[in-house]
Length: 232
Image 1 (cartoon, one colour):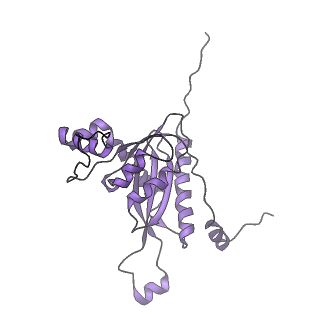
Image 2 (cartoon, rainbow, N blue to C red):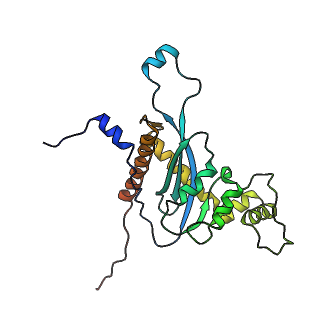
Image 3 (cartoon, helix red, strand yellow):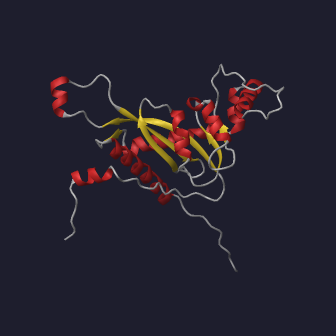
């Protein structure tokens, strides 16, 4: 006797749905890794393809995600058109994280002064350490003869100049950033690489639900370990 809504009703309601990601995090500050991937828009319409063929420029969106390095769960998510640059989404991603943050790792696409400025004085409070490799022709902004404290980006450049880019990545733990690439692989293998909803608001909800599904799968699959006292 339960009333089941039809597809049109579900599609219309999904535009107003913003589910919580519900990650399980510990008490320690988080090490977060950030990246993005492209998702195609599902289909182009049978009549349009029959009359005019497939478009030369296929429409696609960018899924941006922030991942907790310790648990592998998504703690932040945004969906934008493909023309939006990755660096502009770092703040919206981190502002979704309720826990304290210690480190943020990202690739060279996030090497922007606005990113480093945000991480130095984030709304959450304490400064966040950045593990972002600068471009190869990067220049030091503030030289050592000034009384002001050194800038984090300049310190990375100096470390790379001193011991090389590969050594800096190893010593700093930058390679942990590859975990977010594993997340993108899981998304496309389990959920798919397309967005099936038609409205942009519904596409946001669809991709967010997909991230919630991946979080739930990890929570179910991982055992809960705790000490047991034996009185023998």
